[in-house]
Every structure is written in C-alpha cells, then in structure tokens.
Amino acid sequence: MSFEVDYDYFIVHFWPRIVKKFYSTRNITPHLVWTEIYSTIKGSAAAHQYPAQFLTELAYIDSTSNTFLTRDEKKDIYEAFCQYERWKIRAGGYDIMDAVNYILNYIRFRSY
Image 1 (cartoon, rainbow, N blue to C red):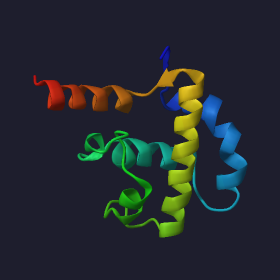
Image 2: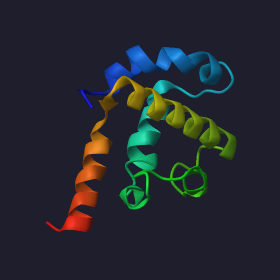
Image 3: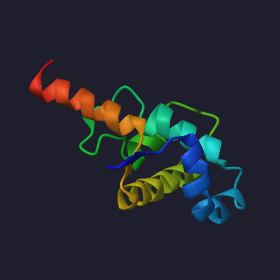
C-alpha cells in the first residue's frame, strides 16, 4: 500500500466513478458514504472483529446506527463501499480505518 486515501482523495479520484449511479437515484452524497464507512462499516466498535475488518452487508443494514436511512439507502451505501474497497486495493491505497483495524487485530491476536 503506497498512499493514504483521505476524504479529499476519495472525492477527487473515486467518487466521480460512481456518482451517476448513486447521486441521481437517491440523495446519497459522497459525504454520507464516507461518513458511513468511517463511523459504521469500518469504524464501529465491532468492525475489527469481522474477518475482513469491516461489517458484513447484513450486519450494516441491520445495525441500529443511522436509523434515518432506509434499508435501500443502506444497501446502496454498502454497494458504494464495496466498489470503494475494490478500487482502493487496485490502486494500492489504504485509509486510516485500515490502519486502525490492523493495529486492533495485532493487539488482539499477538498481545500488546
């Protein structure tokens, strides 16, 4: 992994690739997707305990966080997240939650 993907990089390099699908059909903004990734999908207290270090789609959709989102909106956000993860890996990037979850797993399995 050679570079960090922050919000600005996400907006400039990733979001234009998927904006037509999500922005035109629902009011799903890049800020909403980024916030859901960081606060729930990869950033929830239990995310590092999942094999891939992020919530599964079912766990995310059934989560009680952000009850203002419908199931369909959560499905769209999760689909955007999956596309983001694939793009990030292909590009050789990482985000801060990758580093945090790596450290948490390191401590969990190898001790402090």
